[in-house]
Every structure is written in structure tokens, then in C-alpha cells.
Amino acid sequence: MREKLPRITSAKTLDNLRVAVSFEDGWSFDVDLSGFIASFKSLKPLLDAALFSRVAVEEWGSGLTWDDEGPLSIAATTVYRLASEQSGDPARGFDAWMMQHGFSAAKAADMLGMSRRNIINYRTATRPIPKVVRLACKAVDMGMGAQD
Image 1 (cartoon, rainbow, N blue to C red):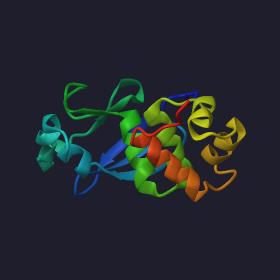
Image 2: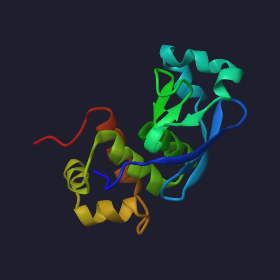
Image 3: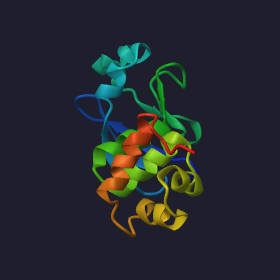
Image 4: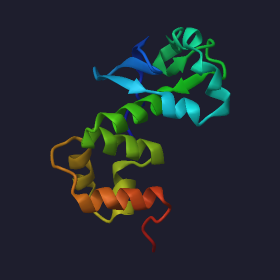
């Protein structure tokens, strides 16, 4: 698994349910939360622009909150995953995929049938991620991981 979980250092609301988020590793991204909010009934109150504008960073940077870390909160890991997916950066997307599944480099290598070194290279953008690896990741997402 990742050495450190992502931590949010700042957040500012933008238009259309987007938030400008900065992470502890120095990466910043304007993440669109509209689809995520729409898919959870408990987050529907955030469709109210006045409430959404009151975003705050949870203690220790562990997420975003609109009600002092109550049910109207989104974990930093989820915000990071959404931002990574939306960024189009393959290395960040691959890192988020590993985090989503709780995979260490060794476990991801085992699931994808490749070396740990290749996984690290993909995760750090040292080497481009081949199409066949992206397809294998989608297969794991669909529950079609490596069979013994």
C-alpha cells in the first residue's frame, strides 16, 4: 500500500460542485464532485450552493467536510482518487487504482502478473503504462483478477 495516505492541505469551492484542492505532496487539482455527490443520497444536501460553499478541511487533512466531520464529509483518499481519475495523468490514476484496492506494489504485481519493479515504474511515471496493463486493471475492477 502507499507509504502515506493522501492528506489535504487546503480546499476552496469553485462553481458547479468543484473544489480546488491541494494535497500534502504539493499536487493541486480542481476536482469535480458533482457525480460523486449525486451518487450518494446522504450527500444530496451539498447540492445547495450556500452549503457547498462552506467546505473545510478535516483535522489532519483527512478529508473535506461541510458539517464539522459529520455525514457531509468526503475522505481525502476518495478526493485524491477522484482528482487522479479526472486529471488524466496515468501515473496518478494508477496510484489511485492501487489505493482503491488497497494494493501494495507486490500485491498489484501479483494481481497483474508482472514484476514489482514494473508496478513501481508505472506508479512513478518512470515508464508509460501499456494498454494491456490498463485493460488488466479494468478487469480487476470488474472482479476478474488473476486466478490461481
